[in-house]
Image (cartoon, rainbow, N blue to C red; front, side, top):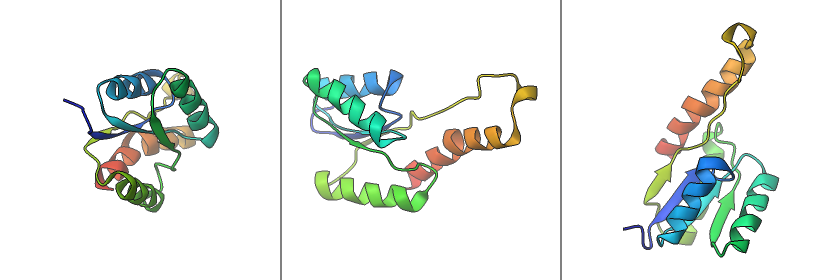
Length: 122
């Protein structure tokens, strides 16, 4: 079912995103993970390579629509299409709302809501 499908997984460098990348790749998908930093993407790719996985990686700012468009264009040139998008990236404050600053809330909303819109639109 996933054979030769091209899948992007945001937040693909750890946790659910990383495990989803493995599962998709095991089932024949060409997988591209997105992470927040170059270092985290490279670390995940190194771990995946040791397990026999072939997974591409990028680290665009998901709040920057133009940056996402640039990366999506690169992926389309390389793979010819995108079949699956897993919008997995997300963050939380991990504290009570009364202790959360407006800036922290805005950062959470930007990644958990705006970035999802940006990825779907791109």
